[in-house]
Image (tube, rainbow, N blue to C red; front, side, top):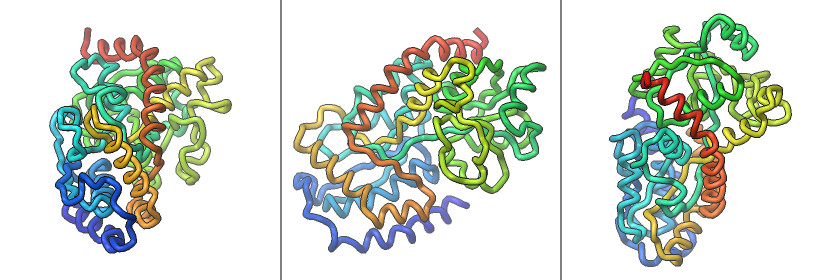
Length: 349
């Protein structure tokens, strides 16, 4: 779908939400009524984070009685946008969406300038989790993880990556370490679309993708799933029927004595897509924004619209979201040595 068609489809889907102004509750954040609020998206227009933001922004505007404008800042692989939110005034007039695990991945990879999602923001809510899946091309000889273990008797498993500061990089390198799978990276891709083309051409064996972002390709048969970075099946669909899970009692990591580490990876990659504000926000403003956002995200019409747009929701309060993120970050530090070695291999050190 072209960007223009995507925006038109999203706008039409939001019409019911915009018509519910009379049904919204009294505005809680009175200081923000009539104000202009920047909703920062640290990614290009047309992607998943942009879609979530354009779904939420008009509904949030109605509840706040404010003007909420989505602003895409795509430079720096999400880091510039995150830094923009961190550096804004904590007055409620700048909020945004963040990839919490992605920022943690960048920090693990040694990028000390990256904002820390556990300390550098006021976390207002979690809107969804990232559930990653290792996939291969539809015509690949790899049908399941047994085939992967057979392949690595002859050579390393080759994977695609665009940079070290990504959940995909964590998913493959940490998962491979837990399963004793030798891997080799092909790097330098500009984005997931380029990685997917490389996979379909047969340049690489696998890539790790967020299932929600690649649902159409997986369920449509363009690519097939080999491993779910999860402790149970991500969603009941024939495309994932019989596909191995990494963690849990029945996960393949348990057979290698790495069940605890595997659960840590599941928690890390699933820490979530977060809505955040700058640090230092006063308590009354933080509380009213958190309450308004939760009401917005749990609104029945918004949930139905998200389902029509194939946007998964897994909503949590700001306090629950930051608690989960901090648990994931604490566990992630135990993986630092593996990631440092992976980065060194990728850079030829």
